[in-house]
Length: 82
Ligand SMILES: [Zn+2]
Image 1 (tube, rainbow, N blue to C red):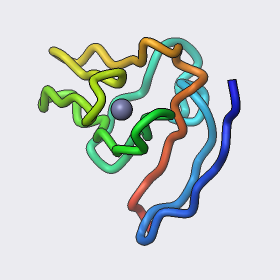
Image 2 (tube, protein in one colour):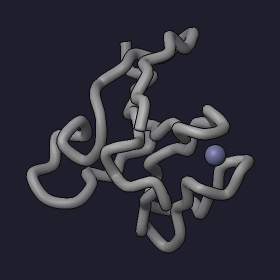
Image 3 (cartoon, rainbow, N blue to C red):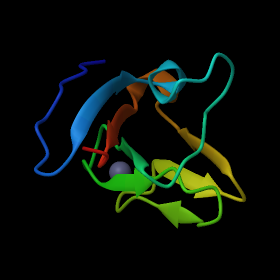
Image 4 (cartoon, rainbow, N blue to C red):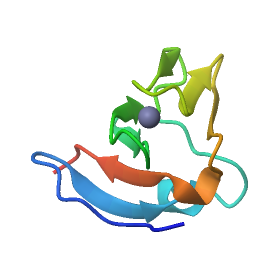
């Protein structure tokens, strides 16, 4: 799988997968972090209180469970913190 970092205006790239969120296991969920779908490039927030799905449906967040059918390490993590 190709992993390509895209510049996104207003966002800063943190890394790939759960480790980029500062977690040692699973995901650290926080509203100011976002996962980017490797397929459609939609950003889905890591707000644990919002259920969201990207445009192509591969990246999902449901009741705080976050992941991609392509695997956690396919998810590029961004933040809008300055
Ligand atoms: Zn997608």
